[in-house]
Length: 291
Image (cartoon, rainbow, N blue to C red; front, side, top):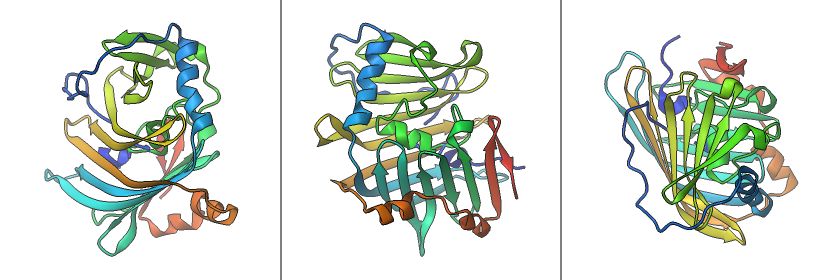
C-alpha cells in the first residue's frame, strides 16, 4: 500500500505535526497565572467544558497542503467548509472542492468515527469504532482531533487520572497522557489564565512527535464554553515531508438540530463506502485495507 498523505492520515480533528527536531512556532508569550495544583484538578477543569459545551454550526475556510505517493509536488486546496458540533461526541464537517460539495467529510458519534476523502488525487474512506481506539493514529484532522480541538480532551471514558501526569512550562499547564509501558500518547498545553487548550502534541510508538494541533482565536459561545476559530495542524511523514491543514471558522452560531436532522448528520452510512476506491478500517492500532 502506498503512502497515505499525512494531511489526510491525521485529518479530527477535529484535526496536528512535527517529527522530533522540527521547530514549530508556538503562540506568542502570554502573561502567566498560577496553574492547577494536581492532575485531578487540571483534568476536572478541562473536563468541565464538556458539561458547558453547546451545540453549534459554523462555516469557514480550510487550506490543505499535502503530498501523494510518487509525486514530489505539493498539492494545495482552499475549500469552504461547514461544521456541526453536538456535544459531547458528535461532529460533522464537510468541505467542497469545485463541483463536489463533499470532497472532504469527517464525522463522529458516540460509537463510531469516519473520514471520507475524494479530491482528485485521493479516493479513500476511513472508519472505526471508539471502543477499539485508545489514541487513533494515522489521521491528521481525525474526529478525535476535532473533538479535542473543542476542548473534549477526555472523550474516552476508559481514561482516568492515573493515565495522566501534570507539569508546567512557562505560562502553560501541560497534561501528559500515558499509554502502556509509560509511553507518552499526547501532551495538552493549557493556558493557565483562562484554562483553554492552546496546543496538543501527539506521539508515535517510538516517542517522536508525529503531529501537533495549535488552537487560537477563541470566541465565547456560551457561559464557560469557548470555540477556537483558528486551528492549525501539521504532520511530518517518515520521509520528512510535511503536510498542513489550516482551518479558519466563522459565522459560529449556537444551534440545536432536530432529532431527525441530528440522526441524518451524525450517523455513518455504510453505503457511502461504495463510492471510494480505497476503504480502511481501524483495527488493533492500525489501518487495515478493506478494499
